[in-house]
View 1 (cartoon, rainbow, N blue to C red):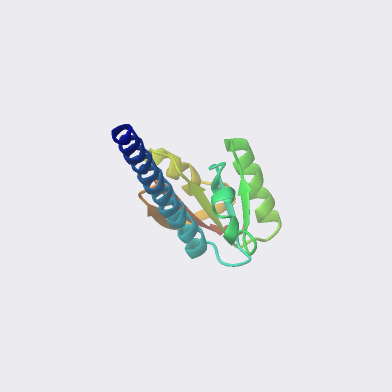
View 2 (cartoon, one colour):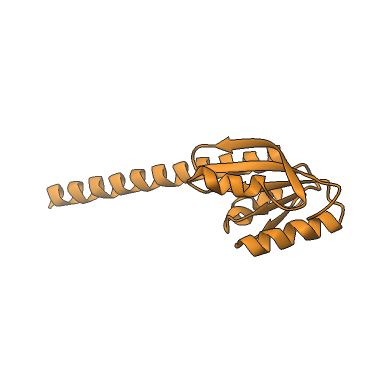
Length: 137
């Protein structure tokens, strides 16, 4: 009876250790995303993203920042035009795409011009700072 109990205890300990490592890794990734948002979007600033979970992961930073979700190209254009009309000078665009084309789409956004870019590798995410143009197309 002792041998099965020891095996069961060891299996339980192994599962706990594995789950702890998974949670720890996830927290580290989310911490990197939060750091990126805090570094790139100033307090009182605006961000636009096609990443549906960004505002959830960075909830700690959203008290001082506004994060707008734009799932489609049309909603992205609409959001940027509205920000332009509201005289928002700088907007940071976040994407978590796998290809360089995902970032390029943000660099050629309407009403704004790409100014700088920052990225993290895990999870793969890019931030593109956009400066307001005098005229909107």
